[in-house]
Amino acid sequence: ALKINGTVIKKFNQSLIESVEQEMNVLSHFSRGIKNSEFFPVLQPKVNIRTGEIESFEALARWVSAELGFVSPALFIPVAENTGNIYKVDLVIFRKVLQWQKNRLDAGLKLYQVSINISPSHFYNASFVENSVALIKKYSIDPKYIKFEITESVELDNVLRAKKIINELQQYGVATSIDDFGVGYSSLSYLQELPFEEIKIDKSFVDNLSNPRMNAVIKTIIQLSGNLNMISVAEGIETEDQHNELKKLGCNIGQGYYYYKPMPIEQINDLLADQMTV
Ligand code: C2E
Ligand code: CA
Ligand code: CA
Ligand code: CA
Image (cartoon, rainbow, N blue to C red; front, side):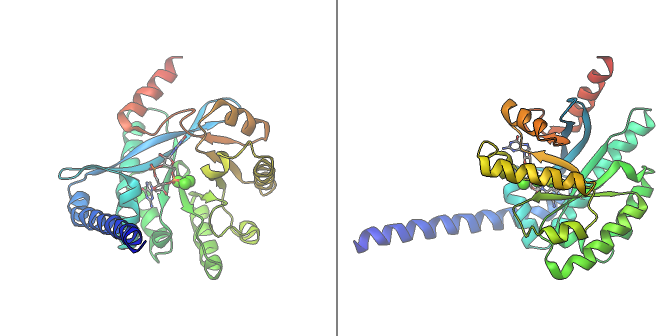
């Protein structure tokens, strides 16, 4: 019995060591990756659920490392977060999105709002608003084309600070979205206190739409966001059934493989060019 136990424990330790090694490996290549511009955004369309039209995009970070090859965001995002480096990823993606929009502006093409993911630690940085405003001005982009998605992890003692930041951004014209709603520290009281313009219902909810209790929860979130004048977005939509159900529930925006996968900027430009000729 001891031997069986021993094997189990050894296996567990082995996988723990492997994951620590993997993380150290990622970390040791991270700075050079940032310096050498190995990080870039892919864009995933956010679709009007009623009409199917592309309304906006979400930018998602990708990393193709010279030494490591493709590194999954599931690996590098937590490593960057835990080492205080996540703002570097956020900013690279933000700049590259602004450059894309600037290129379209210069070419006389239609602009789209793009959501940038901002890690909570970055969001709470004292100069976040100031730096963001300066960056948007530098690229001469109308702030209405930028939205920040912040993962729901705001603890209650930070509500006042969050409110101040969201208000400052809103005054300047940048919208904010509460990401992964329903999985974190969700509290209805802070939903009514924080003036987010958009609420993103997490994929884990969408996955369980056919469960009547979950369906009731999602229905309530969609109604609530409507009552609070917030846009409802459902993420991770993969099937026609999910699409139909969310449409029925009155959800505003859908995002997921059912519509489009995240794509590199060149592919997005092609997609938008094709749409123009339809
Ligand atoms: P998220 O913000 O919740 O983004 C949604 C994730 O779901 C993305 O994973 C996207 O590729 C994936 N996804 C979209 N539609 C579907 C679908 O229909 N099915 C499935 N199975 N997945 C779908 P990704 O790109 O791997 O990003 C993972 C997470 O990493 C993001 O979750 C976000 O929290 C974080 N992240 C990505 N880019 C950045 C960034 O630039 N800055 C920060 N701070 N975090 C980022
Ligand atoms: Ca997001
Ligand atoms: Ca999300
Ligand atoms: Ca998520």
